[in-house]
Image (tube, rainbow, N blue to C red; front, top):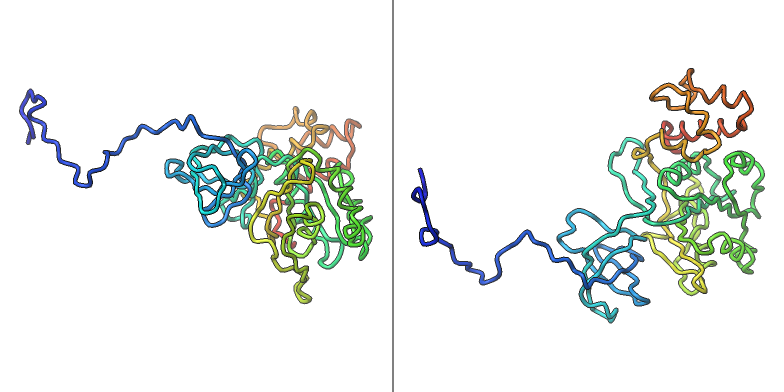
Length: 338
């Protein structure tokens, strides 16, 4: 049944009054050309603390962003009250494209990925040499996530006063990962902190590690004016630490030398989101040898036709590098703690 005649005009159209008296909805979004750029420092229950032109501003995500979430390290465009005064609230209207992304999943079977930090240049993988014991599989998983997200890894070994780093370093030397060895005495007198700062100079560095390894203690030594709570308690039965950091936080290094992002301690680092074919990108010396690999070759030990074996046998690359590649490729297939 037709509602109007064949040739309706304006007088035939009935417009319902807007009972609320507000403006009708529109799909045309404002451009927010006056928005200012800022960096997300931390996220707490929907409130985002951002640095805008030297001021700390609290903001919320605009509804028009939908499900798109901002994380620590994101560059965002903000409108509203940008004074940074107490009880003021601004609004994030845009999230810029990310240069790098560090992601993880709860485990390898979990399809839901969590973005840990955005736009970081470097990933500092903090591992204790004792109390708790080092977990190489955890290190391997962090390395894979770093390579996949475009971050440069840095291995930071703590508590060298309790155990020697030689055995662990022997396993990672072929990977070419830079490393720093620290102990509690050096951290207390500032020597180790200064050596670490040299590796962080001019970079945004995310610190990751499982609980109890001394990650937050190290961050406090690096940024003494913004100390975070630490307990350093390790369970005597499980050998695992208690979480002391509950949210990621970006902290500026002294004299503007860079940024440190302290992340919550993790007990697992799932790699469901990682495509194994991208891990080879972290091994530029091996990449030319993949040209003769069959289509879909994963380059692991289950691929008998992988051309990398012949490439290495001909002396084009160090066999230890191929072993390291395959160890990282197999990491995604192993459960953390294996």
